[in-house]
Every structure is written in C-alpha cells, then in structure tokens.
Length: 212
Image (tube, rainbow, N blue to C red; front, side):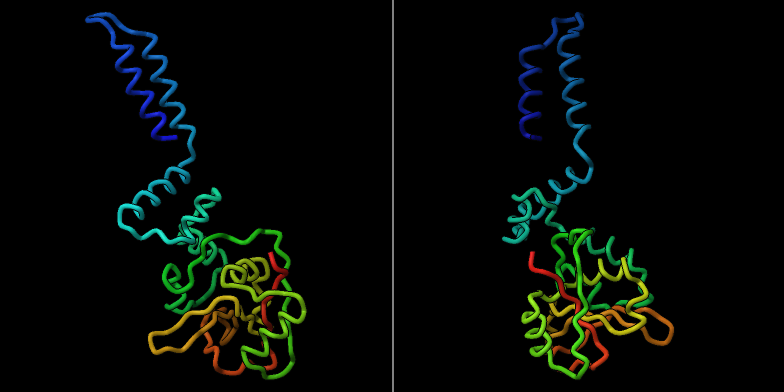
C-alpha cells in the first residue's frame, strides 16, 4: 500500500503541476486525500512494516516470521512477550526467560478464550512420562505463551502448586534442556526454569490444552 501511494503522488506532481503564480486546487485536494490515506493506517501496522524492512535489510527474517506475516499476523514477538509478562506481575523472572527473543520466541499471543487443563499425575514423574500422559488424554503441552496467559487469568493458582509448560524448552550452553514453570516460594510469585532431565514432584501440575 505504501508503494502504491508513493507512485500516485509522483503522478500527481507531474500531471497537476500548477502554472506559475496560479494555485492548483485540484492537486491540493488529491494530495490531502493521500495524506489521509496514510494517516488511516494504524501505527502498529506501520511499525510491523518497518520491522519487516529492517529484518529483510539485515537478512535476519526467519521462515516462521515470514509465514506469520503472510498470514497477516504480527511476527515480531518481543512486544507481545513484554506485554504478557508485565500483565502477570511476577515478583521474579529467570534471566534466561527474559531473553525470550532468542530462548523462548513467542510469535503470537494465544486466543483469550483458550481452555486449559492442569494435568496432575500425583507422583514423581519424568518429562517423558508427563508428556505421554498429556498426549494420552488428548491434549498438547502448554507453551510459555500459554503459561503467561493462564497465570494472568489465574494469578493465585501457582500459590497452590507449581505449573509447568513442557511445550516450551530451551537448551543451555552446557547442553541441558529446560522448561519454564510458575511457582510460589517465600511469599513471592516466580517464573523459573527446571531441568527437563530431572523428575517433577507429585505436587506439580502440567499445563495443557486441546490441539489448535
């Protein structure tokens, strides 16, 4: 749309160039229309196009981001993550989670009406056992984005038990894999990481949802 408007504006300059010392009201009206058309574009859309141009220029656009852009979705996740994280009002967040653009990319926000379940196995289990049980019940593991949405809507649930999002994982430079979880300790609400190779306690709940 931007290129179309720019091209039309050039044609207006050539075809409607006013004679010397004589105002051209027709050209003035058309140029005003052009400015109004640009003004009607929401700022977040213009910002998305600017981000896209920057990534294309630097060769950093990923296939996932391009796919979301072609679906008319905002593929640039940092503002989404920051907004979702701030809405949860955690008392502390693991530093490796706050680097979400690299470690836990959030490309789109889950639907507000997403229905979640908390799978409870009531015993110590491995990550593989928990994932198998979630799949057996017909669900998929929640991601970090799902966890943030769930916690925002249910801020006191993590005071009852840890809530784990096995649908997201991050590999440390040492080679170990971690998943995010929300829990409550020492009167504070935390968003931390847990080693996926370790066991999960019997009091843990695993966030899950129906496949989209």
